[in-house]
Image 1 (cartoon, rainbow, N blue to C red):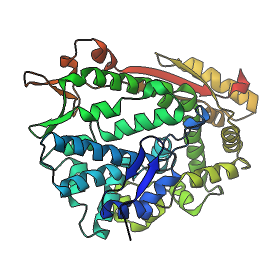
Image 2 (image 1 turned 135 degrees about the horizontal axis):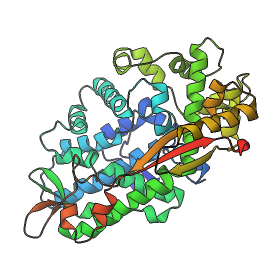
Image 3 (image 1 turned 90 degrees about the vertical axis):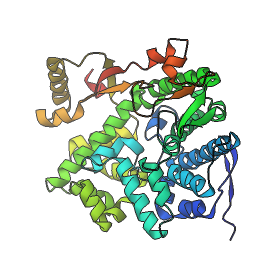
Length: 409
């Protein structure tokens, strides 16, 4: 069987699966699950074209990795076939631990278990199945391999993951200003002392990438309507979870019901193969199927939230720089209780508060974006740039939000 397949990607055109191992990883049930998990969760409520999946993104990131490795090889960086395949496997599997609706339900299903930890655990399971073929890929993913530029290509402040999701998400949402100029950035990559840097002539391209990232966060990922929808689905899951644990009958698929009925810690997840099996059978269809059922549930809070989400009758959301006054929040809850004739405790479930924040670049953070100057020095891109843009967009901007049903206005 020919495993070096070619597929047609809407963003990059024809893309090749370069090795048999990568083909077999893509064919595995863990990876195929990503077809059923949308990349942007509920962003489709604002951008109707945002229906692409984690499967698309992982393949795209693998493609960008092949281009980056080819660029580095052309510049004289020694990269063996084994290292190249491992780097591509690491980026291919970097999101394999994502749960339903991507980030929106990460905290609702597990007890403080992040998708990166789940991805690593699944990679180790795959490694056992493939007879140790992923040893190097796991070392690259964890950052323990003695050539750190490989890890930087997988996970850093300018990696193949970010380049693909900005490229892909701007394509599918139609937000063309979000395109990061990935081709030129990849062409400017090089390695100094086994660390990833960019040539000095890439400074303006880096600025464009960071501006694009900042724009995409405010205009797409943290769009206020998307934030409202995501907070609603989180509250739906929390309400269903509380009801299940209180002994109330709440219909759901067996795997979703399992996670609603108990707290699963990282230790339990890593030591119980049945929990792993349940998780890898869980995807967006479980959530949407449940939400459709819950729209008819006798619990007034759950059925109102579920029906509102199905009909895109989203909560009004207000943003401001300061936290919302406690009296104002109590007043909102009183209005909800009065309008829906709910006890105060239940009415509070229909008011959602929190904060969102964004900084496109962390100057002093881990794996900064370094630039190789013409004089041979390696400096932080904020120092290499003669424009104030990078320092300005590295400042963290924080906004507080409050969401509640529009009917109470």
